Length: 589
Image (cartoon, rainbow, N blue to C red):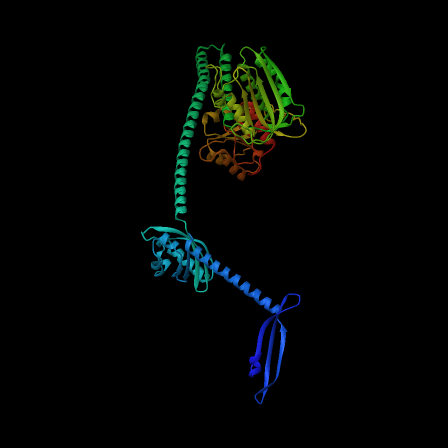
């Protein structure tokens, strides 16, 4: 203030004032002196309380110091991260020339940062990866971020290292974080090689298993062929022997034994027919006519037959469910299966015992594990239980194989359980065996059930073989002249006029000869029976057709329209089929 009063100058000063309370306040005083004739004549100024401003300024200074310390700390941490990071960090120009690299590059590629700074990193790329690298750089030039791009860079020793890149473009600069994944790729390559070896081993195992299965199939076919040959040789022995004696007796004029000779031939033929039926059942190729059948009625209707068949030493018990579902099965085949299982049970009880026939409903939920198991669904179960000798695990494992039997030679064909298996699976069900040595055996046959109220199926009226009211002309087609000749005689004995053809070509030529019914073999060389019927119906719509076949299935026409005679057949079988075909003529296919 004294200096300002001594000369014309501006006065400004900050100072503190202590108040009576002991607190302090900051003041700012500003002033100016005025001189006239060299003398100060007056002094003007202002005093301001600047305590709040001072406190704010001091707070800002402290904050600034704090922030400065933090920035310095972060800078030190960033520098430390840059130096110590195991990832390869880089600042590059757009052409991958480095502006800054962290020390990890040197450890990874074996080149100093000075050496790396004098080249483009892209120049180190593996030749196989250069095209992909160029495409990725093109994406970066458009402002796209590169994430986990993988290529290989050359090491100083000539090897290549696998790199995973994350690159962010910023104007003319690229900021990259790179991870060396060489060891990971080696592990993956090792796993891939191991997986390839395992796959080759699995393929080899599958080839061995396929070969083994083929050998097993061939063994089964051989066993099947041997069994069929054995049984048919027995039948042919009877037929040929009886025929020989018939011819000899005929030459001698001795007719008294004709009836017994012919009866032997007839019975041998019927045994052969049953054997082929069993073979078709085993192969699941027999022709089934499924219908809703109440197995309780079937069991009750067979009790007398079973008792006569099994003899007095076998006690038969029944346990039938009162609310049994209908089974969707072929009624005739079901009766054969029951009889078959009952005879097997009888043979397991040579000293007599108890046979229990049960029926009940069961819903299977567990997926099938073996070939004989039923699939999940609703089933009617037919169970045949005996108190016999039972079976070992080894016997059970082979029980469903064709011609496998534990009986003495000549006591059984070994087709019993195989037939049951085939029938059950073709019907849509399955089979299960519960047994133990010395504790008897229970065979359960699972047949597809139809839940709901019981419905009794009325048996269809049997068509009796009788001559037609008017003579019809039948075109008979069969490539086997002997079979065709016998069939023609049977048809003529039924009162039909027969035109014969040895195949489809001849049949189509004779079709215009006022033919009323076409009777054709199914399996013929060239055009089979189904193809012949299709062509015949084009030329003569509504022509009744009867197929004669040794197979179960006849393709080519609507199953509802098929009239089939199964070989071997009797005169009444032909008559029944012809009456049915002419009563419901086939429409054009």
